[in-house]
Length: 125
Image (cartoon, rainbow, N blue to C red; front, side, top):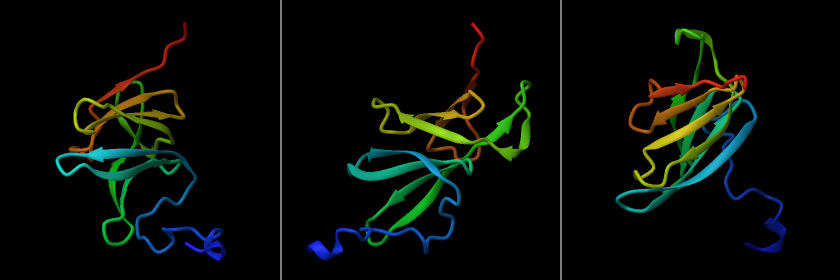
């Protein structure tokens, strides 16, 4: 890139249908097996976790939409606000943890995008 282009973004998601519509709080580079491709995963206040690839053009797919839950694990109509995420390193990036504004940690799998695997609740002690 020449010096005139330094203030322009390399990629722009403004044209992507399904992009985040609220602030993104965390991103993570993830190495996918078996081809060792790198993707970027982002989490946003909109409650969605997106995986971004740049193979030909910038594109995304929804990994999970975080549903806010009650104490009895029933889903509420509002999405949970996602703040942070972390992938495990020993399972080819399939399992990841998500922290929410409500203080819950969701255990998720990139293989199941319609439901979390488990919820860990905060404690008061």
